[in-house]
Length: 408
Image (cartoon, rainbow, N blue to C red):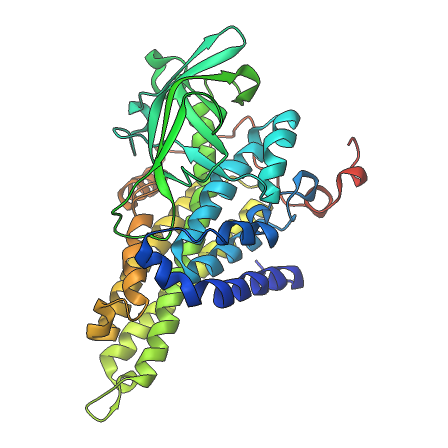
C-alpha cells in the first residue's frame, strides 16, 4: 500500500484547501450563527469541479480517484462540516449511485448535470418513523401504466430545499419488507413534491437540512433506478459510498481540533508558561495526533480498495465508526484545552463539538456499526456480490473524454 500522494491528488487537495482557507473559514462563523447556508458556496464548489470530483469525465466529472474524494472531504470538513455533507449526499449517496446503478440514459439526463454542478442532488431514505430500521419505512410507490405513484415523507434530508434531484427509496411491495423496496429518481419540479427546512439543530447549522413530502407524485417508469425490488440493495450500496465521505470528513474534523489546539496551547499561558508545556495538555494533543493518523490510514485503505473495485462494506463501516467517534472525542478535548474560551463561539472549537455529534448518528449510528463489525467477526454477515458494483478506478474510464472511449 502506497501512502504517498501523486501529483494529481496533491493538486486537488491544495485546490480544495485553498478554497476552504480563503473563502470559507473567514466567514463560516457568521453563517453558522445565522443558521443559514451561504448561497455562494454551492456555485463556487461547482465552478471548482468539486461536486463531480470522482465522477468520470465522460459524465461531466473531474475523473479523480476515490482517494482524492476522501482528501477533498477531509479538507472541506476541516473548514466546516456542512460542506462535507454536501459531498456526502450530492456526490456519495446520489451521483455515485447513478454511476453504479443507472442506465446510460439516466446518467446522461441526471448524472451529467449533477457532476457539472448545474443541478444539486439529495438522498431520501430516512423517515419520521424509520431511521436505522429501514424496513419500517411507510413511503410507497404503486405502478400505474407507465408511471409510479409515490406517497410518503422523508425526514432529515440534507439539501432538501436546495436539490433539484432526489434519489427516493419507497416500497413497491409492502408485504415483502426490505425485499419489496425500489429506488426512484424524483425531481423537485414534479407535481406533489414539497420540501421544507428544519431549524434548531445542535450542529451543522450552516447547512441545509429538511424534509421532502410526496403526495401522489407521478414518476415515469424510466426513472426507476435498478430493478424493482432492488431498492434496499441500492440504498446499502449508497451508504458504502456516503459513509466513506463521512469518515473522511471526520478525519478532517480531528485535524481541525488538533491544529487549533496546538496553536492555542502555544499562545495561552498559565502559571508563568505556555499551556503547551503542561503535561496533561501534551497528553490531549498526543491522543489527537494518534486518532488523526489512525483515521487517515483507514481512509487510504478504504479509498484504495474502492480504486481496485474491491467490496468494502466492512472496512468502510469500521472507518466511519472509528473516525466519527474520535472526532467527537477530539472536539471534547479541544474545548477542554481552550477552557472557558472553548465554551464560546469566539473560537471555532465549540462549533467543531456541535458539528461532530451528527456524524455518530447519520449513515449508521455508532451502535449499528459496532453490531456490524461483531457480525462480520462471528460470520453472521458477509460481503455478498451485488448485481452492479462501483467501477474500479482506471484512467481509461474515468479520465478519457467520451469520444476517446471505445463504444461511445
